[in-house]
Image 1 (cartoon, one colour):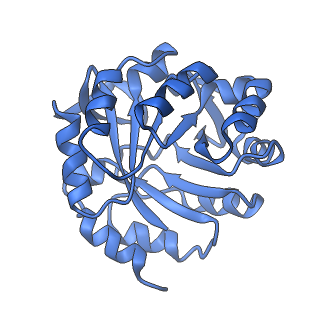
Image 2: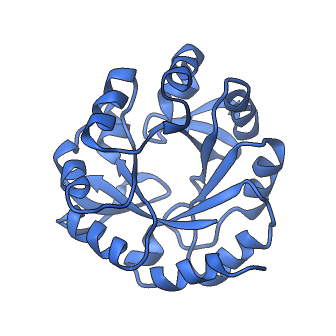
Length: 243
């Protein structure tokens, strides 16, 4: 399992929301590339970049900021937010993005998800954002009737290889991840799983490691890094240690 620092973009700036609420955002830096360089220097093996405006509006809105990040770091970058068609995914790949994260459209349109996986294989990551166990879409503003586990199984059936599981109720609150949710989803599929939401301390990372799920390959860390609740070098070191 590796720690993956998050860079959430809104209006070209680095921000963090609480439980996905756009009314509760805090700006941490006006230069996303500066944050990216710092994370790379502290040992990050990859970066998680989200276009929050794109997630809400349905199309990329922070391309300049994403390009600035890509131009400053050598480590691979995964990007999500507003990728609703293959043309958009392809445009990101041409810019140097390693993985495209599909969320809303992947949930709402099975045909699109199947086509994306067929076309790009392991370069597609499916974001499963859950509120009370149900998949949320449209920048987390709408909740579907599909359960997170049910959707993960569909992704696996269609040939997907990696999912990001986010518990929205935990995101940005520094209250610890939803360990039960991560365990349940990881056990339900053979997909590689990246956990997200709520990580606030080294103890939280250790708790995820203690789940001993071989397919739990990463954990996304956001607010805890910006609020200095934990250091990235320490997170990297913890993840490398064997339980």
